[in-house]
Image 1: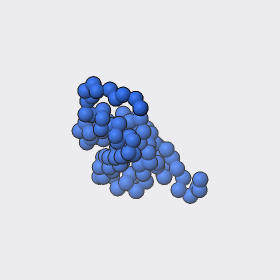
Image 2 (image 1 turned 120 degrees about the horizontal axis):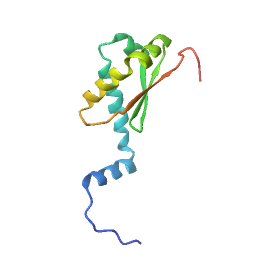
Image 3 (image 1 turned 120 degrees about the vertical axis):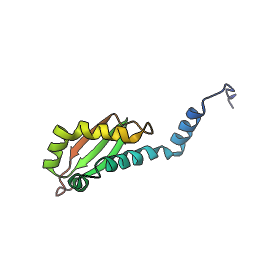
Image 4 (image 1 turned 60 degrees about the horizontal axis):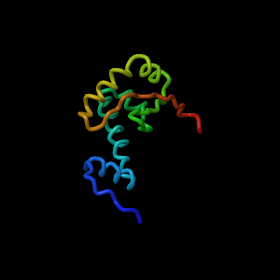
Length: 109
């Protein structure tokens, strides 16, 4: 059995290690999804046609089921929504980028 290091350690690091080990780190994913929904809550069309899919490496992936909305998001609205999400997160969670993926709802994977 190895002797344990008795040096002081930041509580933040201990908690982060524990969250990873127990699998509870996934709260970040759900918080990112909630931030997306909060940022677009006033746009009924985006609420109907977008679905947060994955969050990793500070990047939120959103599925879009309409080519018109996909085009609008990647060309006109991405920076606006990203800024809104970053303002809403209040240093709880940092999202550095949003990636949109078109997924045809009629096509089975």
